[in-house]
Image 1 (spheres, rainbow, N blue to C red):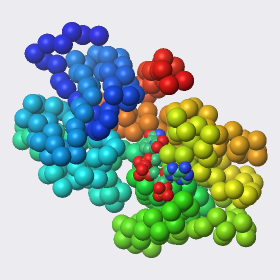
Image 2 (image 1 turned 90 degrees about the horizontal axis):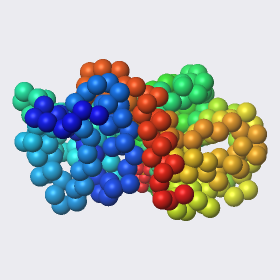
Image 3 (image 1 turned 180 degrees about the vertical axis):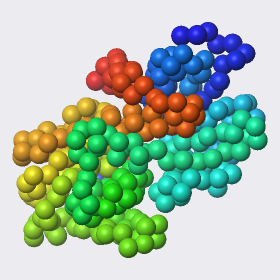
Image 4 (image 1 turned 120 degrees about the horizontal axis):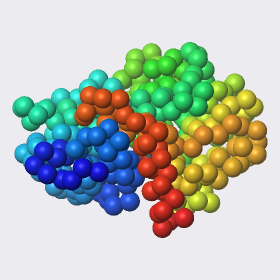
Length: 292
Ligand code: NAP
């Protein structure tokens, strides 16, 4: 890796906490592979200092940043412009800083990263395909926005049903006429529509709560569906194991993380990201982590 000098350009991850993120390993490996004298650093920022942190990005000459939990929505009022997809999703995970003016533009690469990984696994959706999304938080919103844009019909099942209803209302506002509804486990017990894809966008099953599953007790898995679990710690969740036992094809969420990172890398640098290098760096970081 090139040494840090007066020409080194900076990016990083704004969140709280950020210490265990895979993104520094992933982006620094990509910069090195592409021969770029750039670095990506953790930028821990508490909610009450978020506005200052964002002003600091431009003041310190950063090229851009990623944004993670809990700031993906809170950053929006502090930006100078927001890309239409990020506006529709209602969350920003990537900021580009204009080197001349210092203007901050917000983007969301989670939706594109998810679609790109689906395609990489041969799971691209056909228009009208039914997708069941588990969860109604930020990840569910990005996934729903992505698959609705592909012409899918979407059902949202969430532990807290009111939150699923609110997400559906927000999606109808962002995408008028979108085929999206909130469902309850009891609806699925009565009969499952033909389903191409189930997406776990909840945090259930994520380390350290590896024995949790968001799948509603007693509901049969639909035949012929694939399961995409956005959780990537661990690589094989309880939900993935049980779905596989029931004949579903399963994919874990590491590829989505890598591909949202690849899209951010291209926004900052203007060049194609070395996706394989980024994935290998994440895998090494996961393999070496203390949590397993
Ligand atoms: P969030 O906004 O906090 O939403 C969490 C969601 O999980 C809510 O719908 C919540 O339901 C549900 N939930 C939590 N514990 C549950 C349980 N035990 N059983 C059933 N449902 C449960 O979080 P988020 O930002 O959407 O992120 C959710 C997960 O997505 C993350 O943990 C991460 O694993 C994954 N993710 C992956 C990527 C990637 O690149 N692969 C990117 C973003 C997120 P309630 O509304 O009932 O609380």
